[in-house]
Image 1 (cartoon, rainbow, N blue to C red):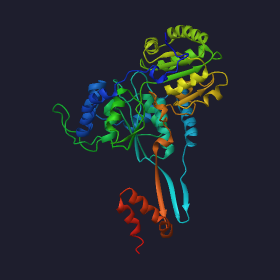
Image 2: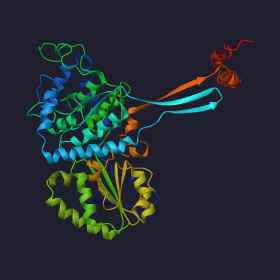
Image 3: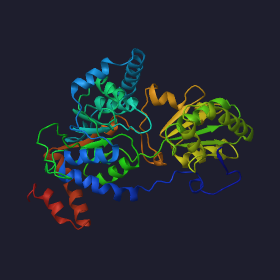
Image 4: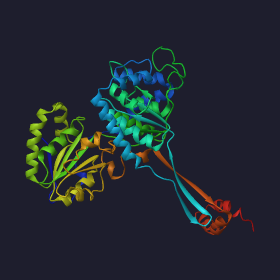
Length: 447
């Protein structure tokens, strides 16, 4: 079922040989550009028109009434409510330890630099819909933002055809977290809404329908957008980068498993399937020096895929160009391969798994040993499941409290401290042919 890539004996750069899904974000940008520009010009009316066009839903209002959020919480199945509350509690515990403290450094007597950490003022959190519903993504977006101290949170999630609102489980998760600004908007139009707001010019974007009156549930522009989504969401994020901050350009989900003969093939197969279940473009990659394990995993995949609910979707993902088994000489080469791949999720199912995991440099999240599957991290490990994809773990981090904080430096020098260093400032300014820089200091100390 999985394509085989044999790197045994190879000295080539693994990045050229490892499987990846083909995504043309640049082309998608040109397709979403008219949608984004329409929202910029026409506000809520353009968002509604795009929602009707792409989601097949005609809505009269974008923002979900608070009463509907409360009703969704009240309608929760008790077991699901308990599970969500446990996920929230564990996420809060982990993210609370990520908070950063202000630090003041005395550079010289009378000269200090203070590093302050200030939360982003307002953020837009995107929760995807599509092939599945993700109340867990509400938790993963909201908790670190709240722990960081963000004062204004807005959530957007695609509307359901039946109701014109986000899925009831998404609304319930928002309610449990105390978030009441929720919009039934998905796709590129949601990112544009966050970037430009919905006030717009309040002119009709299409047909002869009248303008929406200002103030009727308008979404105020945000300073930062976070959360995963499909290629249209990613393209809109790239297009709006600079208008707003973005966390990352998320691609299809990925799992890589580094395993040796000690791994249980049933566990490996089940974990590969668990991520393939997300999307036909999801990537499942096994890296192993063991041909015997490979054969056992293949047999388990054949058995388990036929028994899973989303067989067609899983099969498409496992047989796609983005999924493979990579044969390596040993675990040392295996580590080089997984570092080059930079997986969103990396499982280590080997002997001495913790020691092996500590040698990994590039992964969004590392799941250590047989009892730490990726699906635990998706829900209740306490870690965050919004993670870098497409090899971006080689240079980027997953969502955390730090995502929602900005470092601001306070520089405070006394007259004496500035006088002591003035000569060096003037010298460096003259070396860079910026004499006015030096003059800004020397003017304070006339001869």
